[in-house]
Amino acid sequence: MNAAEFGKRVAELRLAKGLTQTVLAKKLNVTTQAISKWERGLGFPDVLIIPQLACELETTTDYLFGCTDIKSYIG
Image 1 (cartoon, helix red, strand yellow):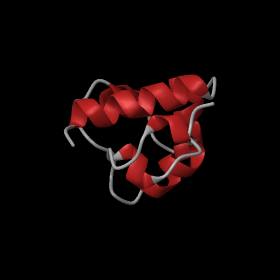
Image 2 (image 1 turned 90 degrees about the vertical axis):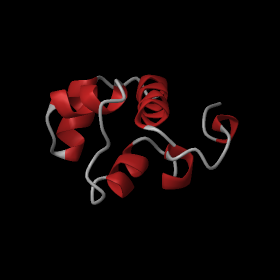
Image 3 (image 1 turned 90 degrees about the horizontal axis):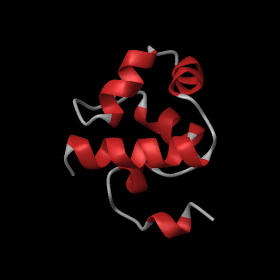
Image 4 (image 1 turned 120 degrees about the horizontal axis):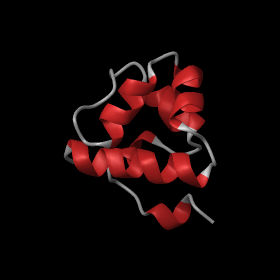
């Protein structure tokens, strides 16, 4: 999985939940710029944030890293 694919998944799930980058950033205690960076495929979150990110987006770490199909998570 490359950073662009990871970022696309984060953005899709965030938007499906109706969250702004700012709201998600506050929930994860990171900056809005960090969320933007991930979603643009310019990097990955710190490994310690990934489980919380998955939880906030109501998905799994496996999905975030491309191991399952999105249809399982978005109605």
